[in-house]
Length: 457
Image (cartoon, rainbow, N blue to C red; front, side):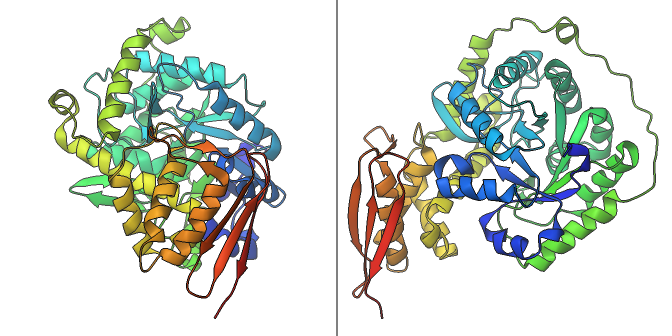
């Protein structure tokens, strides 16, 4: 099924699974985050099963197409292997970097809007295509919590350059576009008019919240009418395109989410058409000549320094504050701390089910330790489980989650590194005064983990 026929979809999340499976007609397709399938074999099998019910769009979040030191081939291989299993109509990734040399940031970090950055993305996209099946690769615009002082162009011109240099279509996140425009004091509709709309193949929509006068795209709130207004304007100019609603938290009653999906269908179903006066655009000479050889080492060094400033426990240096600003760095570091919790809590299903007490404990746990250089979500989950295991409210759930994680992984070591457990494992934990549980895993990192419980009320 081509991307033009996908219709209206919803991001697949564990909290929505039961309602979606009970009412599959609510959506025309779903989108699965690729990285969620790498750690847990269960989620990978689930994604394959979903592809028998709906078209499944595959969405990557940590390929780091903007990393100046180059692409991580192993991540690209993982994405390609998963795509061959799911046979998605489209694969998408972000115009961003999540890694600065050896330092993992853990979230989508904006690039400088420079031709040097465009060339980096084009080089990495070309390499990524070696590992991916022959499926359209869409590139998504990201929300920015800070700006680079080196910007050479505005956001719309930057994405014009990106799609020209990569020959990729655009996954236009209208929530991100609206957030960036509002935060920069611009008219979102004027920004939309200047984007490469003829190359838009899909749209993302999500809601957000205000933080000290700055709008954050949180994926935890309903889509606002101003963003739906952008969707209506795009549809009247471009015609219908596939639209996906993203919700990562704050799910609320499913009926409310169903109402949002119906509202989106109303907006894209309009028969109205309009023509805009759009200024002519042509690619920069560098893109027209097929790119240039930028000083990638310099940009790689800058990305590494920024990654350290965003992820270290210490406050950013005066040099970084002078370059990016104290408030943008504070805001971004706070977003990254929340993102660490968002990534790690799903690995602790029993603990996460306790709601706000679990989230508060998790936030305190990750704020005390630096982000691990590899498998950071697993390392954070192990720390959170250890804290939950001795918490009066969360101890029963924490002990079981901790035992299951220990069956799968070894660490963190003194450098914060976690490794898959390749040998067999047998472990026991006392859940409470009456119950105990055992976890058993056979040899091999992919061996099944089995849980046995005895005792009860």
